[in-house]
Length: 429
Image (cartoon, rainbow, N blue to C red; front, side, top):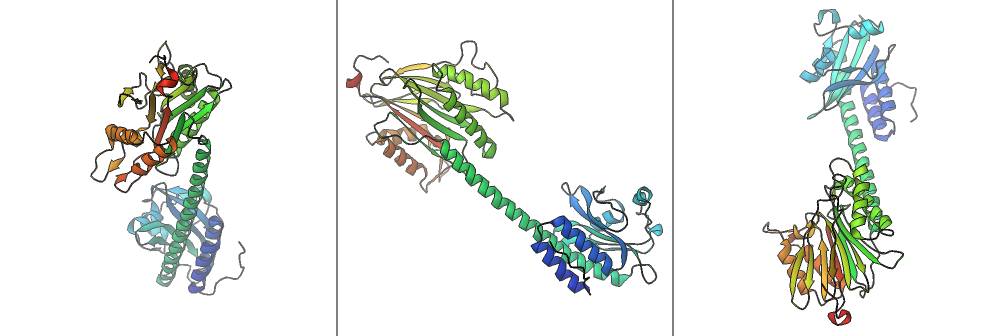
């Protein structure tokens, strides 16, 4: 920022100058120092300082000063001294002789060797916003004492400086929010990149993920390992926001890496739990179902760590069977599954469909405040059974995002379609 050496000729010039600099400057600290120097020169003061309320208004901190002594960084209680009195009373203070004022402590003078004779303070206030205090010390002309006209001028300058400072802060906050929005958009794009590319409808496994906000704590994945086995998973990280999203990204990445070399879902969950326990923080955990389709696609191995029950639909009987979790979620503590490790379910897929979803599916609320619930989801799944998997998922998503239903959490749903009974005759459940 270029600083003009010419001093404003009157308060109006100075007000215009400070407002312009706070609006255009990229360096708030330099702008405060420059404005404070001009105030001191205009009122012929030997020194000046700018105190701002910080730490939830518990501290008055000197953020700029002008004069022979640098007290930048000095912290005072908001009820301390003449500066604190200015804040507490929210009005200007004219102290012609500090020796007559009981609130003048003199500790700063003792520490710095500076001699304070007279003080003039004005609050930095814009309506309900109390920002701090501007203080000028020791008038250098006339009788050496500040007067009522000086106080009037300083109060006017302080009100304008407070407005300019508040506008600068609001602008900074707006820019920060815009930066966060851009970062969330980037994080959401990265998360979407972690999801698998949709397979053709004749593939056995399909999934969908719909974030409730910018980023999601849910995830699913589908992959083929080097042996040609098809793996899949659905997970839900506790909590919301960026922490949950980062935990989601870590867990999803670990699954994709570990599944390629693991013998079974139970072994994968053991290793995944150990990895998460090493670095998990703030009590976060992950509910998760992992599975692997084996043989000719007629069987599946499943392991469930604290997640919603897997719903098995028997086509010929037109009924659902729930397979609940047998162990707690991942990331709570090592060896949580006990000496036998994470248990597995070995199921026949012949004539069956598996549905795995997060609680965001069942806990969506209708307008009357009731949850969608598992039974209504079953009805949706049953009604869309004849559709190709991609269309069935799209239909359910459309229903859950309808105007009469409020999405409360991330929505993730995975479908595993088994072969027809005739193709796997003789297989056992």
